[in-house]
Length: 99
Image 1 (tube, rainbow, N blue to C red):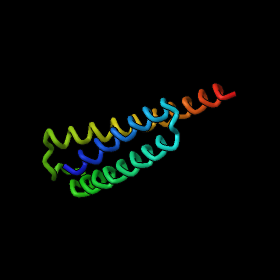
Image 2 (image 1 turned 45 degrees about the vertical axis):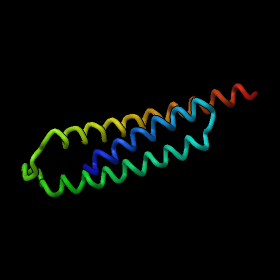
Image 3 (image 1 turned 90 degrees about the vertical axis):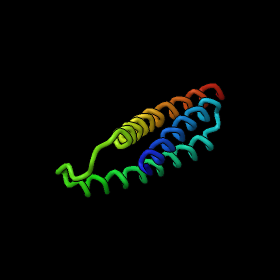
Image 4 (image 1 turned 135 degrees about the vertical axis):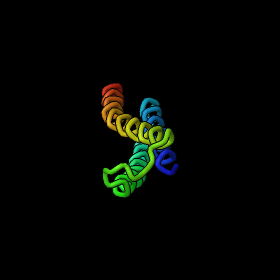
């Protein structure tokens, strides 16, 4: 369940970072991205523990919550990757408008 919580938090923080960058608040955007990256790090740690416990042998039962949590983690990581580029685009746009 912690995997799901941290993954969801990471996703939400990355999306909030995008909203803040779109509004021109790049300091707040950077803080949200840092929070997102920290949440992914914690989720990834839990995921690594689960993989280690399973040892690739099917020792851990797979249920809908596990699959759902994994989906959230992967989505959060993709959103983070895209957010970094989009925030940079917003930053460049703001710089061009300032000149």
